[in-house]
Amino acid sequence: MSGTTRVYGLIGSPVEHSLSPAMHNAAFAAMGLDAVYTAFPVEEENLEAAVKGLFAAGVAGLNVTIPHKSAMLSVVDDLTPLAVGVGAVNTVYLDRGILKGDNTDVVGLLRAVARDGARLDGRVVILGAGGAARAALQAVLLEGGEAIILNRTPGRAESLAESLNEMWERDAVQGDALEPETAVEAVAFANVLINCTSVGLNDSEATPFPWASLLPPDLYVFDTIYSPSETRLLREAREHGCRTRNGLAMLVEQGAESLRIWTRREPPVDVMEAAVAGSV
Image 1: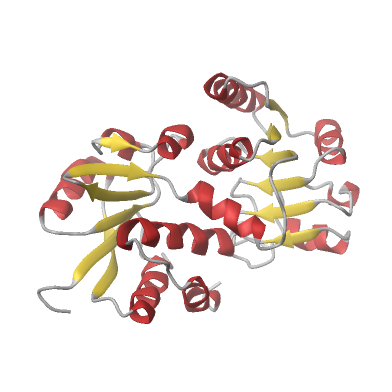
Image 2: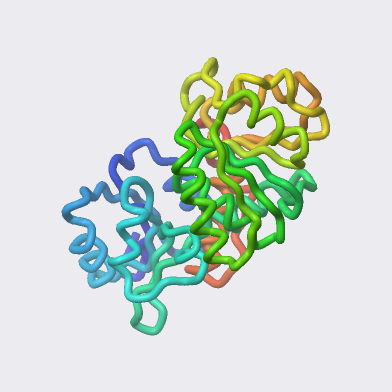
């Protein structure tokens, strides 16, 4: 590092476990940039002061992780349409003196599924109704697809569907309960299933969809979780003939999109993925 090194970072709590520093620093080295990426643990009550202070001190860009993605909406000066649509910010930068908030999760998901030739312009089943689900649903709607949200609390799924249909002025999203009858009916007519819950995270025996034996073999199954590298959902889907992918590609692709925004250069996605692949 020197006095001219550009500093980027991740804010959240906790951040000690994050793969982002390894991923971004590998990219900077491969790109020949005098830049460094580090993690900043920031508690909720200090969020605005930390963000304003870091940019005042010369930080060139920030990523945002839990629990601050939604709170960042009111911290930045301006929001991109994707950040508004998802209701969350994961990338922050200065644009002609204006602190701007963006969301790269949508692009990250689209590029991740595109690796397998999958598309979200058909009928997509979304498991969960939280922040990851909102990003996935924006991706589906951008592609012109339709979605059904299945959630253990059906009211949350229905409310999210209603808000998205109003936002997009389309009747393209439905919400329902994550129960055997509705789940099996939903996947029977779907092209893609995306798990946006945390069920299965660091637990190879937990699954958000215990009816995998009924998955049609032509279904593409994507799990936003990447640890373990093959969740029970993905393992059982693969055993029934489905194509599958875990969330590592989405992590890498959303990080790469942040780098494009910050540097206006094309990042080495393969280098970024290699830097973190051994950690999951």
